[in-house]
Length: 300
Image (cartoon, rainbow, N blue to C red; front, side, top):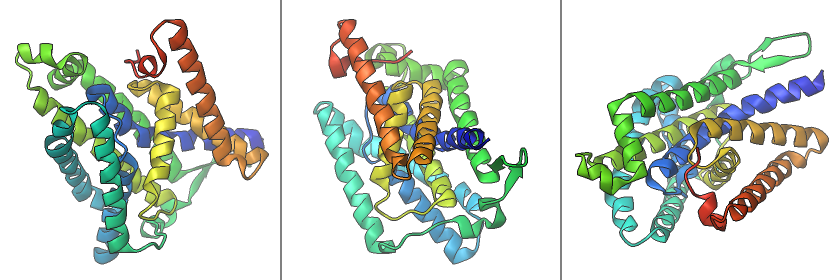
């Protein structure tokens, strides 16, 4: 029965990883940019919600109504004033740009909030640890179930949005070939701005739920970036449905690794990531698409 519990816990943890990885996958799928500040945007959002909750006694869920539009605006500005210009210099420059931005965010948060660990769990009361009893020995936490459901709804909603709305089709067309899309009247600049806004807002949403389920510091961003990147690669870079699968695989691997050995939580996840990465590189090599370039090609 303990293995059933661990499996459920792993799947629910994978829901958080999928939620965290959603924006990273979406930005790469549309703009071909890996945002190295992705995890730090998540922590920035968590800090903003913590600041609102701590100073006004407003519920973190209500604070999201203020913070998420702000994070979307930050994402739009990131694309308009930084990524758009850096892309003109080649694909490497956006990586360096977002890497530098990550350092600025981390140190800015450290200057304002200090190095203390914080959590939003005290601000949501019993919801942080209450659970449903499935059987006598199997429990599902309310918060973990909410995060998983939100990840499914968000990833599924984005997929439907891209498939059935005119704006979604414009985003897909721009992601496929921005020059050709421009010939039929699609404003690629606006599309990229919207894509960046969605990506950063979803990162912010994941950061707030991280703060509810665990603790964080101004320097927690790089660790979250690693988890997000591993989930994206396991599921397939640029694939929203694959992101959910990748998050679940990573969560289950970490949970069972911790069951085998307390130090195996992170190691098992990294091993699964490396095995999948090696397998993808081998497959792309066999197909003649060439190493990393083949790996970063559009996933189905």
